[in-house]
Amino acid sequence: PCSSHDASPISENRENKHVHGVSEKIVGVLGGGQLGRMLCQAASQLAIKVMILDPSKNCSASALSYGHMVDSFDDSATVEEFAKRCGVLTVEIEHVDVDTLEKLEKQGVDCQPKASTIRIIQDKYMQKVHFSQHGIPLPEFMEISDIEGARKAGELFGYPLMIKSKRLAYDGRGNAVANNQDELSSAVTALGGFSRGLYIEKWAPFVKELAVIVARGRDGSMVCYPVVETIHRDNICHIVKAPADVPWKINKLATDVAQKAVGSLEGAGVFAVELFLTEDSQILLNEVAPRPHNSGHQTIECCYTSQFEQHLRAVVGLPLGDPSMRTPASIMYNILGEDDGEAGFKLAHRLIARALCIPGASVHWYDKPEMRKQRKMGHITLVGQSMGVLEQRLQCILSEQSHQVH
Ligand code: ATP
Ligand code: MG
Ligand code: MG
Image (cartoon, rainbow, N blue to C red; front, side):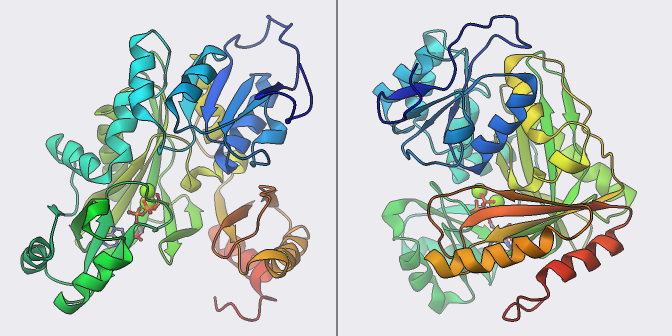
């Protein structure tokens, strides 16, 4: 084994001598961003070996992984080569080469969740069709391939409406709002045109956004995390509050919808279900992520089993852990780049310096090599006795950012 990431396509940080661990399976993760990094952190406690496939030598997960293959997770030969070194394959991003995963599964490679799940989820339109066929409540939607189709959707759904790119969407990059018929063509252009593959969703008049993380073990057993409220800003997850402040009935409905949605997908792992709560107390599904998710970062501090440990337990076949909260309340705040480069680092470091002085606050810094505006660079989790106290503490952390209005 070599310690340098330059010397070989895979650098293994340890010799594979020990065979008496909690699990002998090497977990191969496609993608090495912050989710991969936090999987590695959870893995270290159980001495589970996590191997990362990511094209960036300095990706977030690299330094904490058992091994890092510096190459594309969207290239067939590479994924095949990577799979040979792992006992089970999983993902921290759904935009991977799913044809290869399907081919590998046929050859006996263990993928968790299943390639069929990744295929459905990586195309948001296919995902919507799938869930509507399974009786999951959703905002109405319609595929569009030209401006005529977009106008028809406008007549049917009214305005504003949401135009979404079917593929490669994250953090709202892939969404555009049209407030009236005249804005349709500029919204389509902003998304890269019809050739990118677009569909339209009826506006969901939500009063809150909620999320539920559902974990499924290899034996099919399922557990659900407490319902949380997610607050987005510019389409990017900004704050997560756990537990969500909703009536018992809504809590139950959200959990039921999430469990039913995940029940329609195959394979083990954690799944995050994003939901809209509407004015008339309906729950509509927004989308599902087949992996750990931003709406579950607080589980590291506020639940008995974090979503990351849970995902590892699920994919290697260990018993699922207790998802319930061990603190009465928690708030997660995403540290987004406020500026590019050094200026952005300075602002983030000032925020972190304040957070480090706050009781019950845990700072997570993803160690990404590049700072960019709106990029997820880290997060802060606050835990404590009541949401009111935590909100005040968060204000203390944010208060010196004079240009931010909260
Ligand atoms: P993620 O980073 O969660 O993967 P994404 O790029 O896939 O984000 P969506 O989850 O589709 O984007 O949408 C981002 C946000 O935009 C939602 O959380 C919600 O605030 C808003 N949004 C999405 N769809 C609708 C809709 N139909 N009506 C109203 N708001 C919507
Ligand atoms: Mg998404
Ligand atoms: Mg989303």
